[in-house]
Length: 119
Length: 112
Image 1 (cartoon, rainbow over the protein chains, first blue to last red):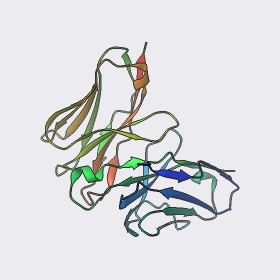
Image 2: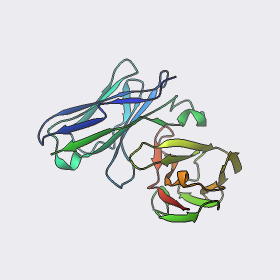
Image 3: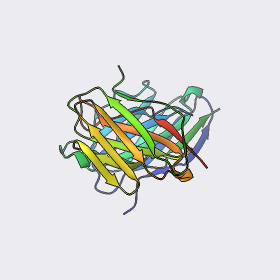
Image 4: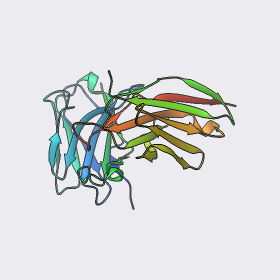
């Protein structure tokens, strides 16, 4: 079936504006993850959803960042009052069921990412 | 100590040789381990999963797991220029098996 999709693929915005990034996980995947990757850097965990709830929001860098997931499917990551340091690639991943205790269910599959540039 | 550690490289290997990538982890209770490949400008792609001690082979790739020593490695046989990428090791966090901790990655360069 279709993989993880993200939109937009590229977003250029001005400092202080709000942006919304969207993620469509693989159909049937109950776990959804958001990461951030700055140029030449590793993956930075932001938030994890199991269904519509977010048991782990520990990676959100500030209260300007929020995320929601509706219908156990699509997720939106919102960044308010964007700053230049928010410029990065935002990656979404999904897995079958992070809580099932079955190791293979933790395999995460990534979307193509959204490249955010804050001017 | 970082939870997942990798040598950042770059690791330069001649074409046709074996590339060996290593990863150590801190949580003795970890049960599953993943290797991702990330080409420049692209998102990570899962290439290997391993859940038990020993070797797991898939084509030119072999993952090796040693839980006693807390390391996992990835061998790439007959390295090709197309293998040039950053390889990320990933291990579930002890606090939450559903949260995966990624290493910072090893940059591999295959020279013709």
